Length: 325
Image 1 (cartoon, rainbow, N blue to C red):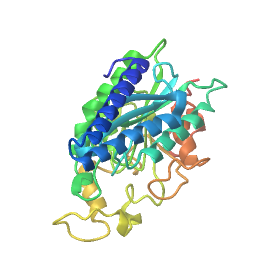
Image 2 (image 1 turned 135 degrees about the vertical axis):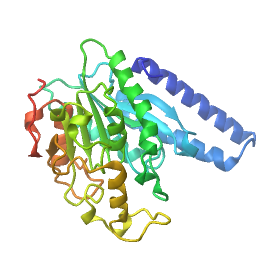
Image 3 (image 1 turned 90 degrees about the horizontal axis):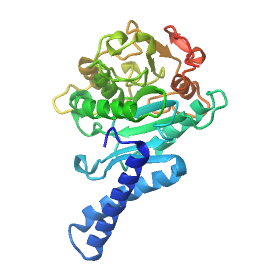
Image 4 (image 1 turned 30 degrees about the horizontal axis):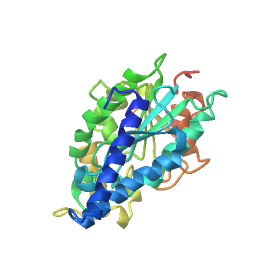
């Protein structure tokens, strides 16, 4: 339903989800179908409903398919209406994300980015929308998919179409639109951006393994490409890898750097690497999954870009452009 206004899209998807839930409950009551599969499907439906309930009036269900990708699911949920927001970020999650397994943490992340950015918009409340975009099949922990480009290539066109749809449905003046990604999600953003057809004003990534380009200028205006990585993030820097960071791949030589080395060969150097260009923002959190810790510079820097307050972004390297406001 790309290109349909968010309010209409939300209403249609909620209706579809309610109808699906009713159908699953009817099948369970009448002992039709595989009960184990139906109960799993019901859990996924309930998970989406719980997320929307948590967001309340500012939640918008912009896409849902609880059966996609062998039950991994697809879901697109916004905190705030992207059609009326002055600033909208479309955030793509990474490795091992599924509709059910990572929903709570990821909704918390988009809410924190939303709330932090909203405080930076000169007293105007409610003019930020953050979108959780799980519109692709994220790589798994138990196979080599994280080392390959196929999942991000498959996510490229759906992401392009979704973001282009947001441009089409935005009310009034064109809003500030930001592509955002974490971990493998940044490779989806990279695939979309390098086509030259991604209609965003800024690109912000955290803990990226690489974005399938050699330098920031291949993603668009390098001054509006922003990347950050913790000094102890094994995805962006192999020397911090630990045994639990490795994906065991059949036929791959053992060794603590094996996965990172293989990822570099397919995803390219991390966008926080020397010589990549763009802006390297300060990440003061540790490891790979803490970029949204409350009151951290990691969170604030992502929110500052989202709000267009570029001169407040703390940088390791690069030059911030002039502010939007």
